[in-house]
Amino acid sequence: MDRFLSTNVVNVKSVSLLGLSSLIIAAKYEDTYPLDAEDLCCYYANSHTKQDVLKMEADVLKALNFEMGSPTVKSFLRRLTDVAQEDYETPDSLVEFLSYYLAELSLLEYGCLKFLPSLVAASVTFLARFTLRPTSHPWNLSLEQVSGYKPSDLKECVQILHYSQLNRPTGNMVALTEKYKKHKVCVASVGCNME
Image (cartoon, rainbow, N blue to C red; front, side, top):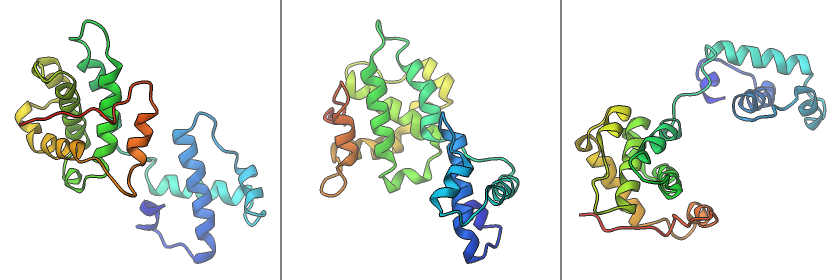
């Protein structure tokens, strides 16, 4: 919606139509079973017709050049977690869970905004491996080749993430910690001392 509204003017009455169309686009992009426009029109007390919704959907997609999303940390992390476990004798799901936890933790860190998602994903992988195996080097040639980053490129981001890892959110921001405490392996309580 934000991207569409940044280049198009929509009257107040059409904002709900834009929201409905954007919801349908998002569902098609992310969900296994996309939402039905006709069903959603019923939820809006039939204030919009199916044709109106589909026309607005087409307008939004054209305005965005059919580019609905950009790569996120998670996009890069999928490949990196596979490579991160290649030198382990047995795959370690703890590396994957801790990486995803740290990736979500990075969303709460203002300092991480300046880094590309690929660099944050590489830093997350580096820190997860270091946290779980502090005596072995957390980066290898395979990770460097796949990510395109050397350990020196990751230093600043790893330091920010490590600080955030050690100073987990408290008070009103405990949902992330609680989410990862529910997994089979509690990664939210994993910490390390990195100097």
